[in-house]
Amino acid sequence: PSPPSSMLDLVLRAVLGLVLLVLFFLCAWLFKHTEALQFILKSKDKKWPATQDPAALEALSSQRRSVTLVFVRHGESTWNITFNKSKNPIFFIPRILYSIFFETTLMLKGARDSWFFDSPLSELGLHEADQLRQHINTASGSDNQEAGLLKTLRGEQGSSIIVSSCLRRAISTATVAFYDRIRRTGEKIAVLPALQEISTNPDTLSITPAATQPIPSWIEKAQTQFDFTDTFQNQIDVSQHIGNKPVTSHGLLRMQAFCQWVFEQDCDTVIVVGHSLWFRFFFREFFPHDTAFAGKDNKIANGGAVALELEQLSGGRLTEPAYRINPSSTRTVFGGFLTKASKKD
Image (cartoon, rainbow, N blue to C red; front, side):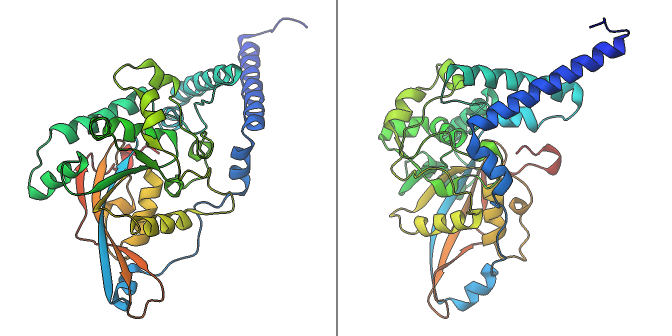
């Protein structure tokens, strides 16, 4: 072929070459991760019928029980790095090309690892989880309520259990944030599929097979502060991990299953390490619908923690248990909520 006649020809050919490379990568990636394609095309994970207002259900009930929940959002993930920062092409294109290159190397190695699928914590995400760990271990609290919550998180007061989504970034955040506690007590972090993120994105699908111990990502293997290999092998309870969410299911079913599970446990507090959209949908579903609350529209910050009281309503004219967040019970433990301008998925 004749040489390009102008700089414009060179640029166009380079762009075309990059587009073809990206398309080839996408086809190869989806061929390997067929489950991701099914969710993109078929899943309605974020769509379900409207539910009754918890305030109305409260009026129908005659009995209630309550359990304290502490929601902990995972640290920043590699997916966040690629897709949730500036969309300016000058910055976005190099990020997407780097992540594609890195994902290709992981695919060629045959590793049970991925930049996109069940994306792990980034280096910043590890730091955010460690910031929460330090706060839990060193903060005394601004009042008696906060001091009590911090003692509970440290495992020094009351009865509490730690549970995590089946996605790696949540398991890793739980490992780091409560590392000192679980190494001291020997307790295990329970993996609950009901906490799997509510979305159709590939990063919300678990790379870890059912009833299988997770393995550290390449980022976690490179650091030396935390022993992820030993912790994942010996202090992560995967007995309830039954695999990925069904493509025909939706998030409300998982949230309801979680509520039922909570009240089957013999403890005062459940520490829940999970995801921004799952938490936001939970606030929308179980807060009284006319109650204003920041968590209905804003995400918990990466590595943030928010406490609340979940009530199980029963008796009266209810034919089955219902659930409600006590609107006066919420308390920011660390990090709080993001403003719309600073959100990261």
